[in-house]
Image (cartoon, rainbow, N blue to C red):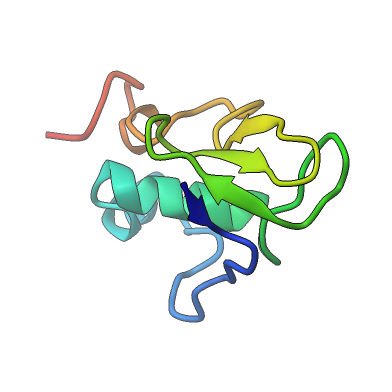
Amino acid sequence: MLPIGSCRRSPHMKQVPDSLLAFQHMVPDDDACAAWLIEMRWPDGFVCPTCSHEKGWALRRKAHTFACTGCRRQTSATAGRSCTPASCRSPSGSGPPT
């Protein structure tokens, strides 16, 4: 597991793109999309939705999932979101644009 206690918003990453096409260019792959989702969900670093503890670990075996060091709850960056890294980049929701 990897510590993520102080992951901050990247100053060069645009917060909200103007259009779907701009978003697809901004996040060209699943990793970039996941990073964007993480930055949007936790702009000042990880905060546990259960206990509000501000330190967590990135789980290696579960993509984009973090475990709180306080209560050990596992939370995905996509939990409660309408898209996943693959579907949020595609107009059809079926995967990456071709």
